[in-house]
Image (cartoon, rainbow, N blue to C red; front, side, top):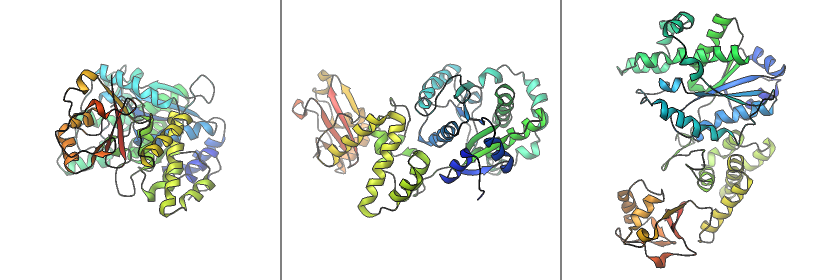
Length: 416
């Protein structure tokens, strides 16, 4: 393990981010001199980022706190192609309108983590559609394509795997490496950006960009990748039985977000505290030594710190209080996810199964009925036994009805 001198790299190293770097000594020297500038690209494949992208956002946050300038690159252009990295089939192509709408939603995720503005260390947000869509095809071939060999490109893991499995790898996808590399060249020339950050699955693309900047512009630039995060049980970070854990509050409420971190596996607590919070390392070391039921204190600390960073201190406190009320006292709490259903509909033979689906606790009424059959569905903490049970006005408690799917997932229904 290298002993870095720059604050940025020391922070990434001690908190467990770094997987790979290029030109290690030169990179460390660059990060010590002046204001280091780094970027990460985010393609607009959905209208929110999820927890799987939080590691990259935290790297930009640490860069800014260490006196560097973060660049958030929106992939308005690259999304039109779709990143094939680590995918077994082509991504569906989105319309320009869908991409623009997704970018508008994604922008919200960065505001709690980075300070944007015009200052030397203020973050900026740019869109690669500004240059990629204006780039002529022959110009791309002559300016970028001349620096890449097919020999190297087919050795990339995704390409080699698809070819070995005789799965289609379109010529459209084959151009993605050139486009992402060109982004680095543009940002080097426009912003003097010298570092590209990303997950380790992006290593091939990042090295391609480093090589292109050196060959086309004579620039010395660098790449840093972070570990791809999986849970101790092998699950994908940011994915749950209920789907993705979105960063935007309109997709995942602060309470649900808090609960995601509260339900972290025991073996992951210390690692996640280092990566996804800014708690001091000595405090984290003390928390991860807890065992038995005491480990729950560490999980609550993780949930509070992660939720406060995204949604604010008050939201974290409300979520903890809601969890305490639900789990300890068996009552309801205002911070629980709440769905409104017109009273004329809710009190007219409205199925409990349909209420579970409307509240987002199940994907379908059929799934809700299976939950009831398994004895895992409750209304106001009372087990539902009839798969065709309906909601009654008498179920209201303080104007709301509490639904529970198992012991950990809860929501409220209120008449509108």
